[in-house]
Amino acid sequence: MAILRGACQCRKIEVSFETAMPVDDIPLRACGCSFCRGHGAKTVADPEGRLTIAAQRDAFDRFQFGMRTADYIICRTCGTYVAAVISNGGQERATLNAAGTRLEQVWDRSTQPVRYDRENAEQRRARRLAHWTPSEIVERLVEAGVG
Ligand SMILES: [Zn+2]
Image (cartoon, helix red, strand yellow):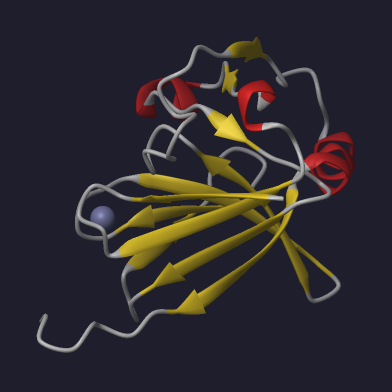
């Protein structure tokens, strides 16, 4: 397993992405919706992996739009789009914005364009549950001597 780390611009939200994919082959996707294009998002997910989002209390907002099928985690301080998260029976899955979180080793690479605008809400949810990464958001304590 590789563990890749990243953070938003102000570093109040840190991420760690565990994956069994060879790091050189990890694909990044560029979704064609206006939200993702506006943020320059490059997303990464691995249904066999694990994503941990560690954030200080109140560090982020949850934004919804369109069919409101996911929460978009946005840093309150620097405005970075960090990840999109869906809940399913108490479990969460997410797609990580590797560009926004400057995910080490991979965030600068080129992307595969994807478009999901023909999906209905049910198809969208099923795709995400099948392809997104099991995830959790944990509270991160401020390091001693900082803040
Ligand atoms: Zn931030």
